Length: 209
Image (cartoon, rainbow, N blue to C red; front, side, top):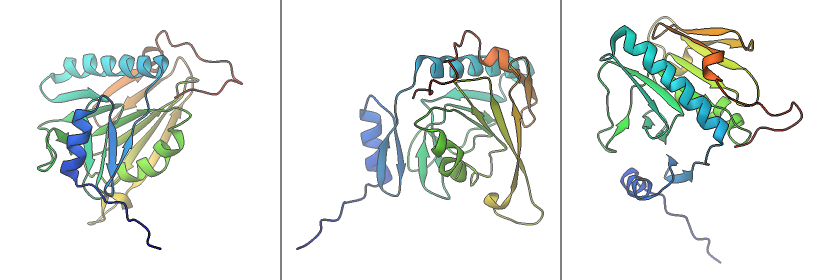
């Protein structure tokens, strides 16, 4: 009795599927994974923060920064992951993948809004992929069920160590009146702006997707 081997897709085949679909997909090791839809509050947090970042960075120099949201595909060359961060900041000239068009390869800041279905992945395996991107200097995780923003900042090691060997230092802000400095782009964001008009669930109610 033979066992059928599932054929792995090429990056080009993934692109054809992803661009023809109404939903976004991640791609890794020849397999595609549909990305789940977001809640109203997840979307509001993402849009609040992206707008604040655009305004603050435009005040510095609008031509030096790009703030993009979850329609922008990113590739991690070291691991082969193609994915869609909730928010990213790219500084200077964008670098695109030669094989998969419109796929960014040099974000400086990556931001994910956590949900019950993605939190474990965003904190673990996905962060592991993101750490392989030498351009990434900061990674933010934003809770949607309570005021909490966690920022991981890369601290490079000496010598020619690969990006994954760098240390990442965590700062967490849970005060609804608090703020957080994004050092790699030189702007400060407040939790009040990020959570503007967001309604948090009761403490015993789990967050949604």
